[in-house]
Amino acid sequence: MRALDLGGEHDALADARAVFTAYTDRVAGGDPAAVSMMVDFWFGPGAFSRLPAQVQGFLMAAAATNAEDVTACFSESVTRAQLAAFDRPVVVACGGASPPVAQTIATTLARLLPNALVHPVPHAGHGMLDSHAEPVARLIRHVIIWAATIPATSSHPDQA
Image 1 (tube, helix red, strand yellow):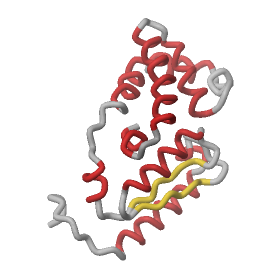
Image 2 (cartoon, one colour):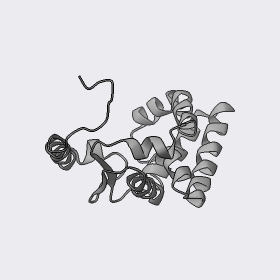
Image 3 (tube, rainbow, N blue to C red):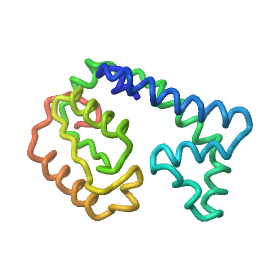
């Protein structure tokens, strides 16, 4: 969400905040079934109802923890300058069938990073690691090769 704010995508940020706040408020009010809102948001209308009952139960049991994660996504404090100083190659993968806000986050983040590309994974949604494992694995291999060709210019403490 921080990328949307830094990138001036205020309408997309406001829309996401409205959905996510409604979700976290419902969970905080004792409604774990509100997790269906998040599943349907990221995977499309009716996605939650199509899940097996056991999966629905698991997700409802984890709703409070998930709501904490959702709240945390609005607490990032990274600055535009910090992103601009990140000199390593970045590929921002986004499912081609993801909701529009995910695609906006991806393109905005890529604009904020100096050495970034957006790579849509065709026909993939938010769960592309599960649904499109092979294309994602190929993308990871490509990034590793690309990163090896670019000399590091930062003084990151992990570089020895």
